[in-house]
Image (tube, rainbow, N blue to C red; front, side, top):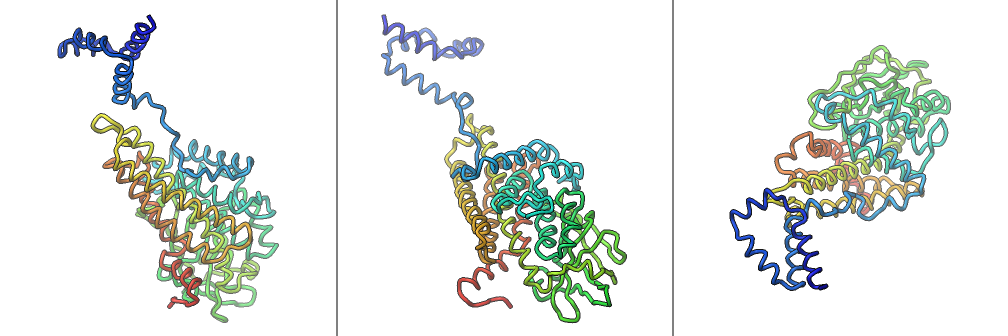
Length: 454
């Protein structure tokens, strides 16, 4: 009796999901009576094998799949409860407010100004600074938040990095107390937008000794002449940090250029293939007069400028991680849904190999930047620490987004699947805040004791 009941149960599991229209179609091709007779002669072991075989052939859509999670080593579990809450708060903002609109703005090359008040409500600007309304959290959290932003869109992460890192950081590290009080509270609330003007049309990597933008002091006024290129936020910023070479002592100095200053002109750079939402500008300064009170009082040489770059370069490495993570998670989700030859392509060996290679690189990048931020929080961060992370992470990001594009086939070049945007934006992250070559030379100098800079 128990054997008969067992067979009935097995039969139920075999046929409980059968569509009777399909069964009728099947009857025209095979002798169902003979099939049932054969099934009836099977012992329990054979029946269980048949159920397992049939389940394996049709069970993909019913199978409970693991969560899509780019944090394979669970590094986020090392955060405090408050830090984890903030991370997830920013992730929800990016997923719910940014992701639905970002491809549209990316395609048009425009900035979604309507998000600025919402971004301000997160209260994360100047996240590591003490005072002036800033949260004063560990550098690790600055990196985590940069990653969360870039995981959805690298342009928004870059806008935020310019505002919170380069612009606010220049004032926080190198400004007088009066300058800090005037600018930082408004910038923290995103009521005042900042930009950072270092790179020039003919001077990128050689900024340390080759700036062509000049500053000449005349009494209590400085007269600036020259051009700056690729300056993010420049088209709408309220204040731009301009770095210029003092004609009297040949040292690099920083200036707070206010919006609307006579002699200042900015032209939006068009037709970019990457970071299209970031409003990069070509700035021209023609006898632009700036008061001595608007000179960064503690910026007296390029070594001071480098302090800002060291602090923010770590953030760029985190942005690279976010871009790579977004591409990996998008590709993984796609391969689990996309079917070829009757099965999800995620079940194919070659696809799984690509995914594992992507995850391996991503995990290595994440562990590296976690340690990088720990060094920063311990006050032990050096130029070479930041530079090697920037080199490694941006290189690996290029590889990850390339593999993500590959596993998605032709759909990988469509904006609607996001990976095309990650592929393009990875190229910009690879280049800004110091090229691979320049950052490699910084590390090379540290480990060999010899400078290979020209």
